[in-house]
Image (cartoon, rainbow, N blue to C red; front, side, top):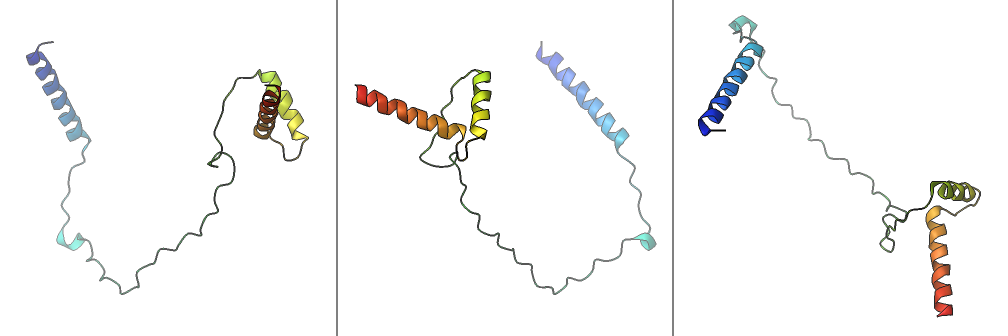
Length: 115
């Protein structure tokens, strides 16, 4: 595209935009002195509001924000994951992450003792 043609296209777009803005802008009506807005109220001598300090939040609990843990992803069949989740519901204090952690620890222990 030639430079002159591009400049012409942009000029045409600018004209269209200006026309649209003029059509959408409502006319300005001057208010008569009797209809003028009342003068602003004098500043009050009220005390400035203090920011209310937020209560100190407890540290986030959980493995996601624990510095000794990291996320490790793996792919398992959906049916296996669902079956494991159902079994974990019956076990108090055991979640998927804790199960995987204990299984990995057992695996490492067996590898060290056999090697």
